Amino acid sequence: MVDVLELVLLGSVAGFTIFFGLPVALLGISDRVKGFLNAFAVGILLFLIVDVFSHAWDQTTATAVSAFQGTGSLGTASTDLLLMFGGITLGLLGLVIYERSYMGKTQVNVDPAKISTMTALGIGAHNLSEGLAIGQAYLGGLIGLNTGLAFVLVVGFAAHNATEGFGIMAPLTGLSPKPKVSFLARVLFIGGIPTLLGTLIGSVSFSPEAYIFFLALAGGALVYVTMLMFNTGRRRYSSGLMMGGIFLGLCLGFLTDLVVSLGGA
Image 1 (cartoon, rainbow, N blue to C red):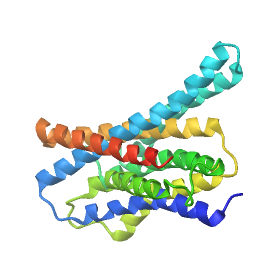
Image 2: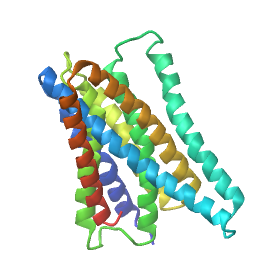
Image 3: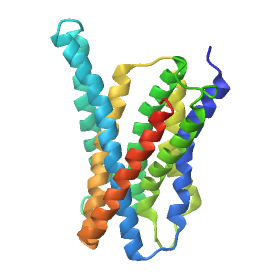
């Protein structure tokens, strides 16, 4: 039986620890440190791209292999492939349209606030699919506050989603004047609330097709944002600074994901 309060608590921990990244945007830092932090965020985003595409593609290829072997539906396999590539297309081209509509076709220096918003949208799509998986795991009794690994799970999500919050906040570091706290809270909310929504939905009904689509959508959006951030940083900072930050961001992403996996999610 589903305990709604317990489910909401798990979904909230998984989603709103993203707010741990908020102080980053309020720091007074040098230009070089800002470059490193942006590169670090690129590393985190690269990890998320690998993570979301691997999960979506595993699900998609599983249905395709089943159909090829005659044990699955060809229609399901075709649908999953269409959703996979359709999600990537919509994630990439959707942000191209967003940029042209809200930033202007001839704008050279992209507004950090817009980069932050686009990053939040991409991470939000990823977190919706993550929430769906959490809801399903809870429904199956794999996770919960009464399980032995609950503490590890909570700590893991806190660390993992704080890195996502950092990725959203990084483009806003070192700005003068500093961004309004209300704006920072809004973009973090965009990134975090889908986890709670997905957790609640996943505990009632789970759709593999929706899971694939939102992961692919998130992956496409994150590719676009990551390239935008990398190109901006590469023009201003040295290769050593950029690669060092990206390396550490990638490592942190994988390590926090490992902690979440040890917690049973």
